[in-house]
Image (cartoon, rainbow, N blue to C red; front, top):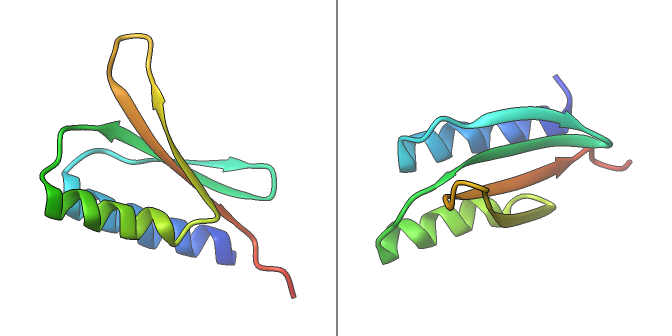
Length: 80
């Protein structure tokens, strides 16, 4: 398992435990990306999700065509 994939799977498990949402994992250039539906969160949960997102190289929030939101995080391979 690559470094990016291992970190992404660890984060995916944390997101599922925190939010109960299904997490999609996909290969992207140079690493792995996670995405899951953004639901309303209380302050403590929001901070925990941000902590997990902060362990990635990049993260963000997209508005979907149906009006819902999606959070995503990208994990890149470590450089020697």
